[in-house]
Length: 101
Image (cartoon, rainbow, N blue to C red; front, side):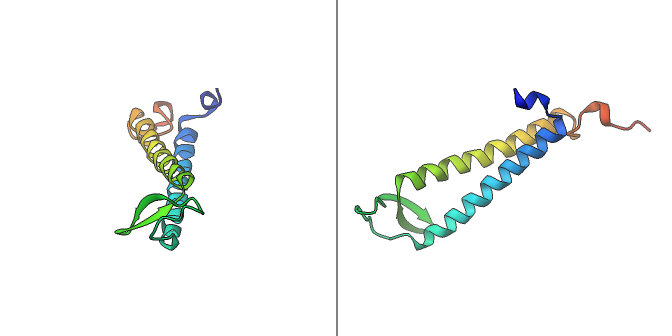
């Protein structure tokens, strides 16, 4: 498995990059939905209600599914980076890299 070849520090960095990237894409897409129709449009497939800044707009089912995946990817990656960091006492590189003075 590819993750077994990564050091703990690299795994945390990868998880953070994936998490923050997913959140950035999620946010950009969320903002773009401000221009979505406020009434269902059957012809374009925009029939799934979606709340954006307190108003309901209609997006496609694919758009809705992508938002769910991006949201959970961001959450999962951030949780993974926190768990790996905590597993090593706040030091993502592990106990062997700590300096003893």
